[in-house]
Image 1 (cartoon, rainbow, N blue to C red):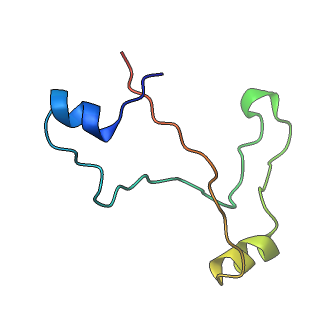
Image 2: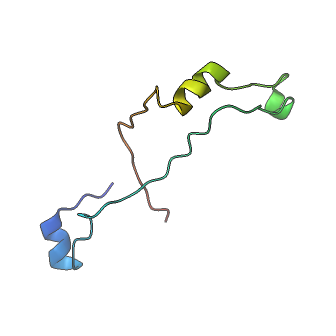
Length: 74
């Protein structure tokens, strides 16, 4: 893992661009059926109970992300 500082980056690479908003999109899909028979699954997996999906949709639940690591493929 490489780390840098603003001062080091600006002295070698140019303007620091990380003060603006940055976005990462997380796909937190809920519900749905896992297809029976796929990967030795013998019956559908229905995910979260509908009551949990409804509560999330109504804004009664909040998810917090503690850590995100972004890597560049070589």
